[in-house]
Structure formats: structure tokens, C-alpha cells
Figure 1 (cartoon, helix red, strand yellow):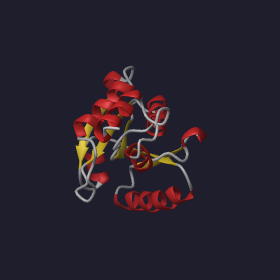
Figure 2 (cartoon, one colour):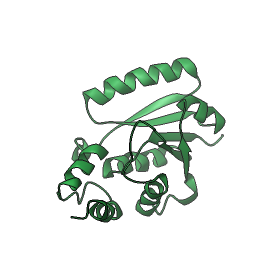
Figure 3 (cartoon, helix red, strand yellow):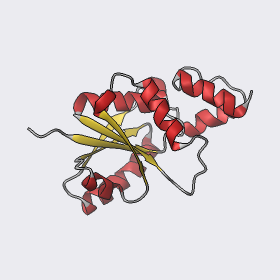
Length: 162
């Protein structure tokens, strides 16, 4: 049986514990997971792609060679084809996420029928957490401990110098 490679795309700016929960569950189901760090020119990221990758590596030391990282900008299905990935991993927090992901899943399926989307419901402890909300709270000096890995808590404090 051929190994199954999944792609988990996102900006992960920064990675949250909700993202990590989904990534851990994906690694239980698939042989390899490629985390694609989106290079989105319309967004002004707080952290560099290298910092974001390091946050994930630090938070998941046991994943080692089953976890790969790539920067990406373009059609996700093209990336999947180029890396022989047959699964796209996505997380769902709320109904709004479902509607957004539903559209993209159908478009991806139309463009690449051999690539399936797999959705994980977030853990109930993380269903309200987003990277944007974490950054906003941290920018006002709020404590985001427990919402993101410890290295991210420290990096946010340093960025916002509070």
C-alpha cells in the first residue's frame, strides 16, 4: 500500500493550539503531512514564514520526518499534484468555516477529482480561537497562554513589548 500524503494549508500566523490539535490528528491518519505556509501578499503577517515553521517544529518534536514544510502561493490542487498528495486537511470551528470550506472543497474537487478534502472539527476548547483573535488579544496585553504554544506566547510578548 502506498503511503498517503496530506497537505495542511494555512497562514498559521501564529499557530494556535487548535491548529496543532488538527495537525496531530492528521498525523494519526496519514503517513505524511506537508504543512503549507501560505505566502499571501494581501495579508501582512506578524511572523516570518521561518518563525511560523519553527513554532510548529518546537510544538511537535515527535513528528520529525513525517512532517514537512513548504511555502506556497497558488492553486492548492497544483501543489498537491506536484507533491503526490491526495488529501487536503482542514479544520472547522463554526458554521461560517463550513460554508467557506464547502465552496473551496467543491472547487478543488472539480479541478482535481483525485484529491479529497478531510475535515476535522476543532476540539471544544479551541472552537472560538483564531490566529487573528490571538494577535488582537496579545496586542492589548491580554494573556494568550493555553491558546498557543509557549514559544508563541513569548514571541507575541516580544513583538508587542507589553
